Image 1 (cartoon, helix red, strand yellow):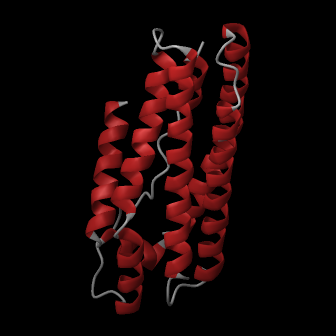
Image 2 (tube, rainbow, N blue to C red):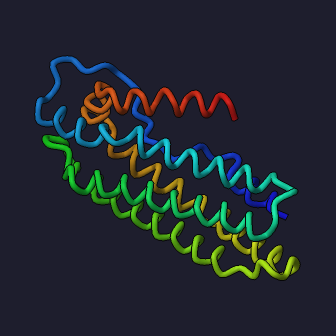
Image 3 (spheres, rainbow, N blue to C red):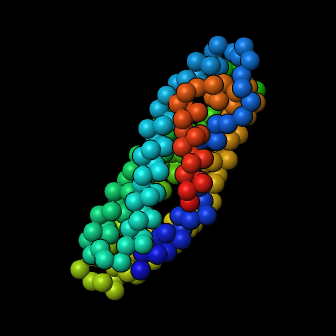
Length: 197
């Protein structure tokens, strides 16, 4: 009954900053300082987000759990996704626009807006899961189908947020981010996760 949740997750890599590319030359010290602010927390955010997607996938494949157990697992995962994307938006918001980058302020605000919206959407899914009737197997299964349908609809929202992040990390910004240890680590773990799936 929960397989549709797994299907909703497959085919889309976890939303992470792509953060790979050319190595920086002398660089821009202000931009490097901005990149450090952004990258320092990326590994922790990615770990939380990846673990949440893994938990949803595991729950979706689990045929032995009770409705109450599935509800608890999905609810926690949606909460973690909401928190993870909110934290990412907050870091970008606090870092401000990348200095010396044409259109940087607009790109930064676009990424913050889309990540915040994604966080809210996962918070809404948590509320939906929390409201499911776990005492009635039929009603629970129907409710879970509705949740998985909502997740599928959210795929375009995830892709939009990913696009905003990629747009933010073009050119000099990409080079500055690529030099930061936190972003290198996040990029390496994202590549490993993509290979494993």
